[in-house]
Length: 339
Image (cartoon, rainbow, N blue to C red):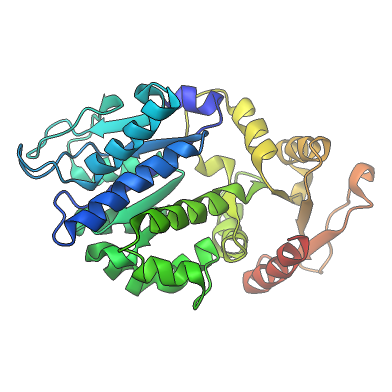
């Protein structure tokens, strides 16, 4: 599934939540099914889930299962094999019953925390409905891994609690504004599950569509610059930062890099030291006609290195690695201008 997904440019959406819906079952179950259906309507999306059926053999109410039901029904209408678009990951051992919708893989992880980390690391985006402590852990793992995660607040549980605690980060990640229709639907749209599902998947799609490929030397000092300035600036402007060193996937690395640059909305390169890999990726971005942002560190005298003739006419943003807050502010201004 994973290698096939890469070759076909699929994006993986993980939907997680309660193993047993606590209240307002009809609306929440319908919402889960509608989200599964909407995900399948995006032809390059895969639905990934943890395989939960419910809390007992007679309780098929887990969000995982209900979402997969909606997805499977939509795939039947489209005449598509469910094994190609639904990916279910079973735990090695489980105290709860599991469903077998889609392509099933049994994880090698025994520890539930590691298993949730696998789900997060393999997802391009995460949606949560209601949920308890396990859902909360998925949300926080996703935020730590800089994966876009959308807990739907009107579903209650840990999705609501996480939204309350991390609202500013969530709003920045998805470029959602307060007092807008989508904000109100996320908070009060449970009684219209079809509309809420449409809004949720649209928000996710907008987030995944806008991305920036980052080319920079793969050294520790540059990782710190990425974490402190580059990634926060991009996220605050609504872009998903694609750092090849942070994307761990099997397959041909060069092919993955080329495809990531091709799919990106903008391209950012730190040409400090004229690293060969960075210059190679910059050349590909030029060929593909991507909007480009160039960075270069200054030395202790405020000067940067020699810029090659080929890119000497490009505007290069000089920065001091000791002033990363300033770099972040400058990047936000440039990114907003490009938008």
